[in-house]
Amino acid sequence: MNQFNLFYQKIATNRLSHWLNTLPAQLTDWHDNNLHGEYKHWQKTLDALPSVAGEAKTNLTDKVEVGELGDLNQGEFKRLENLMKKFKPWRKGPYHIHGLHIDTEWRSDFKWDRLAEHISDLSGRYVLDIGCGSGYHLWRMRGCDAKFVVGIDPTQLFLMQFNAIKHFINDDQVHLLPLGVEQLPELKAFDTVFAMGVLYHRRSPIDFLYQLKAQLVKGGELVLETLIVDGDENTVLVPGERYAKMRNVWFLPSEKAMCAWLERCGFTNVRVVNTDITALDEQRKTQWIDTESLQDFLDPEDNTKTIEGYPAPKRAIFIANA
Ligand SMILES: Nc1ncnc2c1ncn2[C@@H]1O[C@H](C[S@+](CC[C@H]([NH3+])C(=O)[O-])CC(=O)[O-])[C@@H](O)[C@H]1O
Image (cartoon, rainbow, N blue to C red; front, side, top):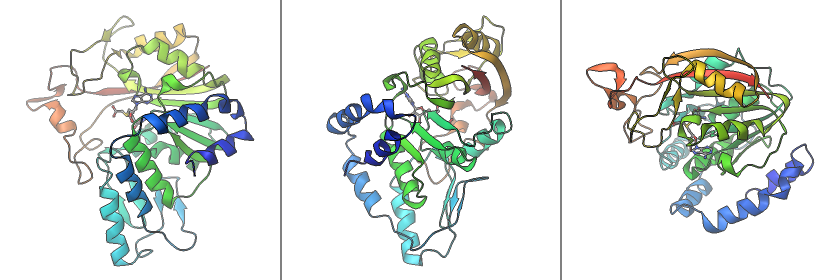
């Protein structure tokens, strides 16, 4: 069965039905022409995940947790752990699955805690998370009673990680599609759009802001989180080949410059609700990643600088209305 059929059925009867004009053709093309070399192996790993009899208790309000230790016998628990490790690197989380703690590189809950009190109540809302990674925040949005939650992310390993979690948390109002933001039509249908940790990966940040706006209903809320630098409304850092060892980092505006860009794109009520220097307990090496982490991206002599000599990662959360 086409893995997206349930999604199509769901949106056929809700306010996203116009997405059916383009989405099935796009995802069929993705499936026929773009599958990752490991995709079939990943699918086998997914198929081998143990099942738990009966309804397990889910907690999505202060963490992402389903069931508890003891739901699976020892052998099945070990199998769960081994299979989940095949989806390394686990970057965004953490997850608690029948007693298995997937201690991801990032404490994505810290970011959620920084924004939760500032956003409009999500209950009953249609919500889109652009660049959602493994989907950690999708579950937290659903935990705030969002009515329908869609994430998009082009990285196929993250889709697999999401599917692995969804195997255990069976909620048909939470979906992840393997799309980039540039593939979205102007849906104008979401009450809240989140775009966190993506702007600096875009080569054309102004086009990106227009793409975000085009997903929102009139008056809808944008929650944008991105790397910033200190400075006035004319300050923007365009790093050299790498920033904190990442090759794909393009524009790091100051807070004021970011606000000006949002206003220039027609957003109103633009405000900064939080700024934060990424700490070493938020992004760190765990047994769920085999690669380097923040400590390796900073100057060992001076943690206020990246290894390339730029200001160390500092992030801000912006909220605005379409
Ligand atoms: N064109 C694109 N369109 C959409 N997503 C993209 C694109 N290109 C890359 N991505 C995705 O954007 C995410 C950025 S990570 C933020 C995760 C989460 N939001 C977080 O706030 O923790 C931040 C980071 O690790 O630097 C990745 O999952 C990419 O696959």
